[in-house]
Image 1 (cartoon, rainbow, N blue to C red):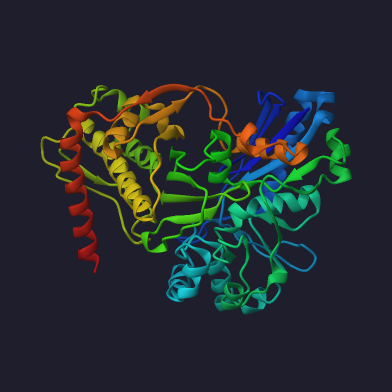
Image 2 (cartoon, helix red, strand yellow; image 1 turned 135 degrees about the horizontal axis):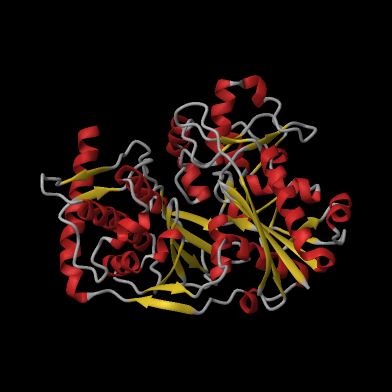
Length: 485
């Protein structure tokens, strides 16, 4: 038997097929473009998601041939928080407003001032979340708002096309600010506060449960069975956690992608929204997770690489790979504002301590340090929320750097493990969810951790110098915030 994972990211849709032994047997990818019609706006046309899905499915069929009929389950993962607004006939009413769109910052602040939102949803109402986007629409285009019959998250719009069902699951729904995260159900109180009703929400299932079956016409087109199960799936970070086996209390991972994530699995619901930690449902029943989310991680290095005129790997190669200690220069990595722990979309990046003798290598090292220090603030926020992972698995493009993982291990005071080569991202986690939904498999048996290729332990010889540099980093950030008022 085979199982398919579809991960709808911001820049690409990735498809991954695994067998019963969870070995990857096929994969395909199609690019997707985001549009920015105004400053702070970020949108995608849902039709582009369908076109990308057609592309990857045809590529899989070309490679697998008759083995497409062996696919028994499909799991979905995707970018969170996007508002896909549908009319009564399921027609898309407007471009999807994405997770990194900040047009509804004022509306988010007003909702967050209502204590019910933090009390019920378990998290701050961030500008990127779904609910404030609908309030923005109600205030700026009430006629269009009146036509909204359903709001779907991006991967759930893909599900509607695949299975003909309006369904979401707990981990993605928890990022809308409409979910009673402890009860794992929509909150009528929060919906009413934004002018919405339960009827406009999709049905909810657990991520490892069936949500419907593949439409017969699509099954015929791709050479698949019409009874192929479509699993609930997961938001991208929860799906990555399923792929990494981060599903038990104390398990955690750090993601060094475009954004940075410090993720910890929890077996109880214990929100502390004042810390700006995200407390969401996990993709598995009876589990939750907490995340510190920073908006610029590896993207900060990519940004500096563009300024410096060199590839990120080339910049890192210029550095002492044995960690000679932090840079004398400080860097704040807030290129797009920040979520955890500051909840400040207006916070901005910058170097401090530059001199006529500052080298490119010192600036590169400052970027690596700055991201690590911001992750330390996220770890402190997680600890304040009652969660501290015992060790971390490292994923994302930035995790390929031994030096960066060593810095992060020392700055956080935690062992950081890099998994052995192989697919372990959100698409792999989605395929695992498809397997569980199709076979009724035990999550504990399926969601095992990957073998570790290399471990990075904190370096006691550099702990004091990193602590001092971290103190300078925090003082600089506080000074910048104070100047902004």
